Image (cartoon, rainbow, N blue to C red):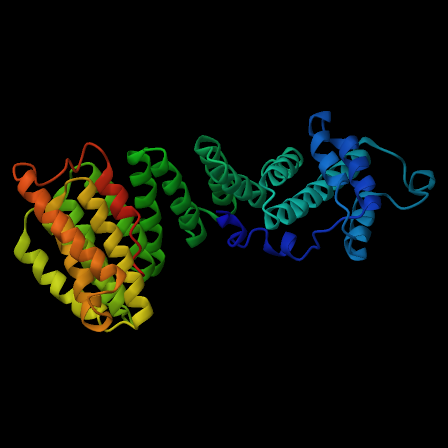
Length: 385
C-alpha cells in the first residue's frame, strides 16, 4: 500500500510531479556521467536498472538534464570564466539533483508496474544522491511497509517528519498527516506508548488549527481509543468514543450511517463492560439508521458485522458476538429473506453461540487487555462502512 504517492504534502509536488518519468538511453548516459562525477560507486547497481529502461524520453526532460548540469560549450576556455573548485561543485550538485530526479521518476514507473524490488533500488539511489528529500523519504517508508520491514519504515518516516518540520514548522496540518502515518507504524510494531504520544500530538495540531469539533479528528480519536482500551483505561476509552460520536453528530452535513458506525463501536464497548441497557439502547438506534441505507450498502455493513461476530465467537467473547448476528438479521431478513446467505449464516451462528454459552457458561468473555485483540478489532473497523 503506497500511500505516499497520493500525498507529497506540497513540498515536492511542483518539483517532481510535473516531470516526465521515462528516460532514453542517451539521457541515462548523461545521468550516469553526473552520478559517477558526484557520488560514490556504491549506487552503480541502481544505475544499471535505469539503463534497462527502454521507454522513450520526453525531449523537455532530456534538455533539462543537459542544460542544468553541463556548463556551456567553451565555458572553461573563456577569458572571463576560469575553472574553479566552486564551479566544479556546482556542476556536481546539479548532476546529483538531476540524477536523483531521474531515479525517482523511474521508481514511480516501477511502482505503477508493481515492480517494488526495482522501485526500492531506485529510491535508494535517489536517497544516496539527495538524502534529505521528503518525497524520496516518504516513498521509501511506504515501500518498506509494503515489504513488511516496519523498523525501516519507522526510520524513514521519522526522518521525513524531521525534514518536514524544519521546513513547515510544527503547527501545520501536513505535519499531523505525517504523524498519523508514524503512529500507525508504531502501532503495527506493538509500540503502543509511542503510537499514543504521536497521535495525541497529531490531534493537538488539528485542534489548534481546525478546532475541537472538526470531523478530521474522528479517525484519530477512534485509533487513540483503541490504544487506551488496550491498556485497560476504560473510563478514558468511553470518553474518547463519546467524543467521536459527538463530533460526527455535530458535522454540518451529518452522515447517519457513519454516526451509526461510531455508535456501534461504543455499544460494543458497553457490552464488554457488561452495561447491557446502554448497549441495547445504542444497538436499537444503530439498526434503525443502518436500515435506511441503500441495499448494496446494507449488504456491506452486514458482511462487516457478520465477520466481527464470528471473530468474537472464535475468541469465546460470547456476549459481544451475539448482538452482531442479531444486527445482521435485523438488517437483512425482512427484505432479503430467510434464505439469504448472511441471514442463514447469522441464524447458524446464533445456534452455535447458544451452544457455546451453555458449554462455557463460566467463561463468557476473553481477556481484553493482555492479548491485544480488543484493540485490533477496534482499529480495523472503519467508521464509513
